[in-house]
Image (tube, rainbow, N blue to C red):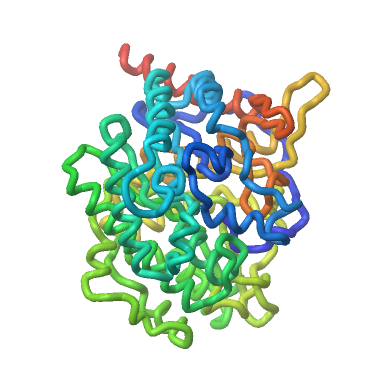
Length: 483
């Protein structure tokens, strides 16, 4: 979930919010949830037959993560999932988006599923359903079995075939209880950050490999979508893309050209294949020196563009760029944009160094609806912010900046709905403080604080605020029903 400077000096939003939740009114069936990812929270990396993933390997490689942190223990969710489900229930969550660990379910990346892995997710799903929480499963959130990386990883076409087989087996095991499925989370990060910039697992810097990874991730999505549909279930299936508006710092030709190139790599390289069955001609031309796209075979794009039931959008920031004023941060994922500078607009920033721009959420939602006639129902599958939260003397965890952030973004979502966007749900990132990839445990995104020494969970003030938003929606829906 990153593509620009993460070393920027953190600046928080102004402390606000008092009695504003009453103004947030969503449709009665709007789904409010929270999201997590397997490697970030589960721990138990060698328990019950789980095999190493690329993130196990990467995080154990010196110099790759802050403080040498790993996901070995993380939030110990594998052993504490019931406690976490009770937390969700206490907040009134209508849904929980979690990811399934491929190396826990299919340790070799092929063949029969690991019964103990299936049993864990079955118990999690059943606990959610018992508490009235809709389980929303993501099949892949970056933890590729290391054995598949050893065989070529996502740059290899075989990995897409393996993913489709994995998806079919897992769906068959859980579809009787799980109705919402996401194939991939943020293929941009898996490909461009993992294989071009090398700042995410598997830590490779090879632009040609990154572009092959883009295609084979999307092909894996298309094949998995078809495999799930062949089972004849009522499952609703989609993909999650991380998107961000990109605009030029000025109306000059070079600045507008810079914005076109970054927008092509950040957004259209993924949206166009999934929703229009094509790669953008200008992006293909931009990267021609690196790849001739010979890895794209006849029929692939039609496979990728299978009809979706939903599109997940993860949003964290917008970007303004200019040309000729310096290079983007190195190592950079922007294969055709390394001469582009990302402009500091002086906006407040999160602890990740990301500028806070709630209007950008409205803009990207409206843009997707406008530019892609085939877009299905949309869910905001991740939105949230890291701030340096710490418990106060009285044991509470004040986080007014996060409350301000969430409030502003929910309002932006409402504006997008008023402008015709078919938005069905919102998942805050994240339920728990967790292992934040290369940042280790140095960044806290959770609405629930986790003491990593004791594993104690403490809901932050933002959790109470979010619970109140949900409660007011439910109360409003009940009142409407009476009339």
